Image 1 (cartoon, rainbow, N blue to C red):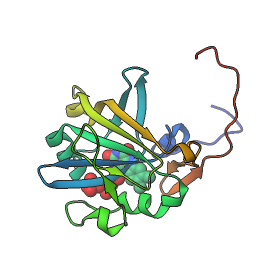
Image 2 (image 1 turned 180 degrees about the vertical axis):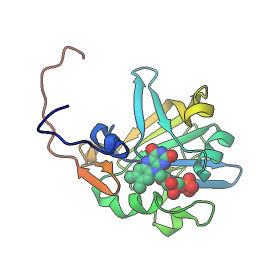
Image 3 (image 1 turned 45 degrees about the vertical axis):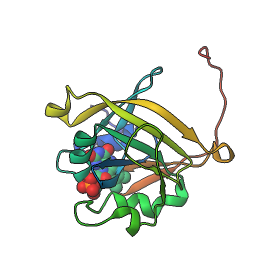
Length: 180
Ligand SMILES: Cc1cc2nc3c(=O)[nH]c(=O)nc-3n(C[C@H](O)[C@H](O)[C@H](O)COP(=O)(O)O)c2cc1C
């Protein structure tokens, strides 16, 4: 045990390992659709791109994701902070979050779930593996189409530090890379 450090509550550990930008996960099935905020996601493979994510079974999004077997991952910039917090603190079983938070959408090319227009990037995903859903609510998704606004490639993203604390992405630095 270090003399200069203090114990961190275990429930705060995840804030140290924030995995990437906070995203908006949109789902749809047979005329129903929804959107929720998500930060527990991780890349798992380059190509085809695989993304793992936790979508808790208590969420309406979980029901629609399983039913539709697909979703979109929409990447908001800091300008969408209010919608990000809103979609993460309201229930799609009770309200239409797209209307409530002014999120206009466009049809996706390969999946039923919509693309959120105000997000600078959107990924269309299909469920690739559900082996860890029963134990961890963990879905493996394959990205089957991806879109980006070329004028906003470096939009500043939001990163969740836990319990309402967010970091705004800073400047991009290019360092040496042996890959590509
Ligand atoms: C910043 C933030 C990140 C979140 N990340 C996740 C996540 O990764 N997985 C998850 O299941 N819920 C996550 N949530 C909680 C859901 O977004 C929230 O419970 C939402 O109300 C579920 O909506 P739904 O019932 O309409 O699907 C997050 C919430 C916030 C505010």
